[in-house]
Length: 73
Image (cartoon, rainbow, N blue to C red):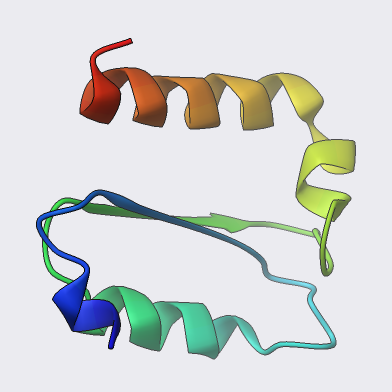
């Protein structure tokens, strides 16, 4: 199904220390998705909000940049 999202932009963020959902799931979704797409694998981050908690500045920078690039905001 993820392949049908294109040409809508897709941002996948996944923690490499996620013990609930293996990071390989995001890698497979990314591989199946069409462009435009971006995958951010976060070292040491677990499941859920841990990406934000690990480095809120970097999280905000990346998400805002993605929206600006694809929504023209």
